[in-house]
Image (cartoon, rainbow, N blue to C red; front, top):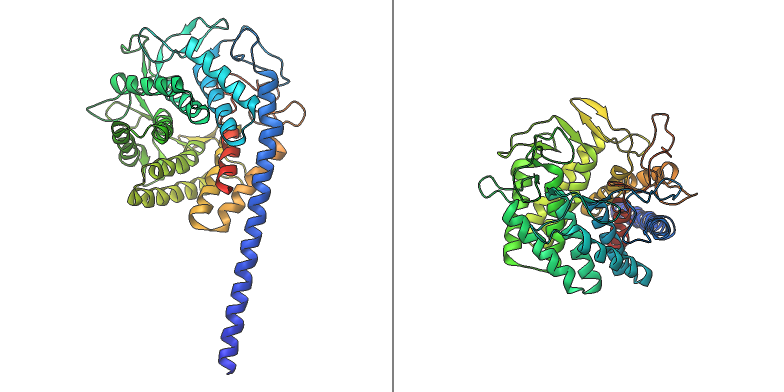
Amino acid sequence: MKKILIIFIGITTQLFYTASAQVSSEKKVSRLVNETTQNLKSNILPFWEKYSPDPDGGFYGTVLNDGTAVPDAAKGCVLNARILWTFSRAYQLFGNDRYKELANRAQNYFLQYFIDTEYGGAFWSVKADGKPLDDNKQTYGIAFAIYGLAEHYRATGNKESLNQAIKLYKTLEKQAYDPVNGGYIESFMRDWKTPERFGYDGTGIASKTMNTHLHVLEAYTLLYKVWPDSGLEKQLRGLIGIFLEKIIDQQTWHQRLFLTKEWENIEDIDSYGHDVELSWLFLEAAEVLKDESMVKQAKTIAINLVDVQMKEGLNPDGSLQYERDNGELKGGLEWWPQAESVTAFFNAWQITGDQKYLKASVKTWEWIKTNLVDNKYGEWYGGLDPDGKPNTKRPKVNMWKCPYHNSRMAFELYERKQ
């Protein structure tokens, strides 16, 4: 009888602690989601609504930290595609008509000024008046065009957006896909001839890059959600295979960043932000294909990627380092790796139920609130200076500073809690 009583007490105690942990997790999740959603609606999106629309059309290419626009600044393909995606997603989730207006504004401008109607694809940048500036074709930029237009269709049902996204996809398959080695070539001249240098970053000698393939994967995943074409499915599966075989180093659990056409690694760089970003985007791609074995494999890869980045790049205060280049930490504390960390850690918690990942997600968000959120002018600072203070000299809007990573973090958490 005594033994039975001890067993009963043990089971009861275990159930109590399990229930308590569940309640604790629910409170952490609710607070995290509520705070990130509130930051999105009252801080991030209002900044873009107030300061970024250009009265002469579209959106300013550069806006300073305090919201002052630079009217003659060039307008980038990636920035405008990300604005299109952000307000389309915001409208889809929250149904605010103002978000729809801004999404439509972004779509109209993008189709009118960035799409190359003569050679296909999208220009890398245009002047303030919409005339082409850099008319080279970057696979990275076209991937974001697909991403933004597919989201606009999903949010509004606009068939023009879907048709243009499909057209851009077919252009990439015709012009950028490498049928011999697999994957996608980085850069081209306007007429799709070989450029003088490859890419928008690096040394210009990498004909293929991790970053471009990461966002082609993301774009094709979203396009497949709204247009489940068999040819697109094949290419999406091929991209997943490329990551498994060519890009992810499964010995170190980092990605190879800059590569030759034959997939030889050129640089010795570990990019912590991109590695955590891949962890959840890779799983999303597997899930959209509804392949159980692939999903299982993707979950394992996600945890391995997150574990290594937490071990090697995560600071005790919850911030994530930018990268390690030839063994040396570089890049400081930038805004976007922090946003990707919150999502990646939350995703790892959902996969495993391990509290350490949820705690890490919350801790990184707490660091963001303290160090990056600008409660005076809105949005987030682009990063910290070496003295640990926000860099207020950097624009809030430019070719790369956009409402994409931080908004997407909030969108993901909001949707995952529903």
